[in-house]
Length: 187
Ligand SMILES: CC(C)(COP(=O)(O)OP(=O)(O)OC[C@H]1O[C@@H](n2cnc3c(N)ncnc32)[C@H](O)[C@@H]1OP(=O)(O)O)[C@@H](O)C(=O)NCCC(=O)NCCS
Picture 1 (cartoon, helix red, strand yellow):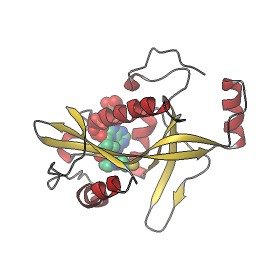
Picture 2 (picture 1 turned 135 degrees about the horizontal axis):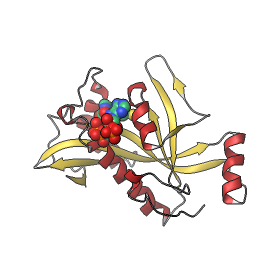
Picture 3 (picture 1 turned 90 degrees about the horizontal axis):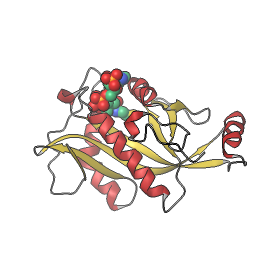
Picture 4 (picture 1 turned 135 degrees about the vertical axis):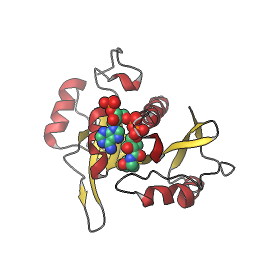
């Protein structure tokens, strides 16, 4: 499986993430919006491809996370100095894999790509957390990867119900999926 930037020459017309709760919005985003978003710097999309078949996609954009007082105190004790009110983040704007490829590691591989992207970005600009507004059926997927809910920022709307979550890419210990499972980190 390769992960490549989404460019207009790649055919995504057959992509569907399917499932019991069919997420048509995620299919439609890839087919109609993703390239427009990239063109206007609203989000960049990357595709997981194998043998010419698009197995999944992820869209990144930037974000900032406001911490609660308790969360800030916790981070302060690790950093040894008071963190800013908001922490820069790389946001998973969209994530989906092909319906018939469920549970084969496509989602995790795309998340690893996001983690690597964050690490690259953090060399040139402040970026510490991965963030996501998770739909209800995906919350446990992100929890499995080590994401926690943000005290600020969850959204329950008329047509949308999401949980704002984050993952600290500079935590002292990182899970295996990051590829830095044994690394000793900077805070
Ligand atoms: C979320 C999603 C991208 C995960 O992709 P995937 O390729 O199936 O995930 P992986 O194969 O990498 O699975 C990694 C682990 O998460 C688990 N997992 C996958 N989807 C899960 C879900 N929705 N809820 C709970 N656990 C899930 C897998 O069982 C696996 O567990 P294991 O490590 O114990 O074996 C996929 O379920 C999907 O496209 N869902 C529909 C769209 C969606 O919800 N997108 C997220 C929007 S915020």
